[in-house]
Amino acid sequence: MTERAGATATSNPSPKVLGGLVPYLQVDGALKAAQFYKRAFGAEEAFVVPPDEQGRTMHVHLYINGSSLMLCDPYPDHGHPLEKPQGFTMQLVVDDIDAWWNRAVEAGAEVVMPIEVMFWGDRYGQLRDPFGILWAMNAPVKAG
Image 1 (cartoon, rainbow, N blue to C red):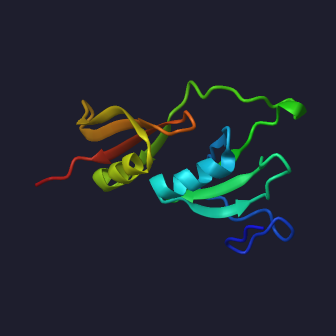
Image 2 (tube, rainbow, N blue to C red; image 1 turned 60 degrees about the vertical axis):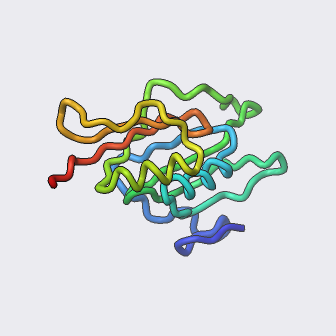
């Protein structure tokens, strides 16, 4: 059983939610995605429901960059089949975009759009994780 921030599957399944809007992603392999997000984005595990006999979990709660992110596996046998991620981008607003970017790429994220200075004046780029989720990073251009 995973324990983090005082929460376990048998004691308190509600660690503090960070942020006012929390993305809840369904991915094929939520536990593997959580491990990837730890390596790629410095995620911290807040809570995990132990996997079932098929290795699926119905809930993972992570903290990334001061916000909560929640994950689950698909459960087609319960009316929740896997659907291809589309129509959204996970946005990370960071101070040191190079450090965040390099860590994610070294962990295995695919570069979709290299970091460039954009028309709005910030540095911005996009990556795709091994689970099909598109991630963008945005940071102010540093003077000097």
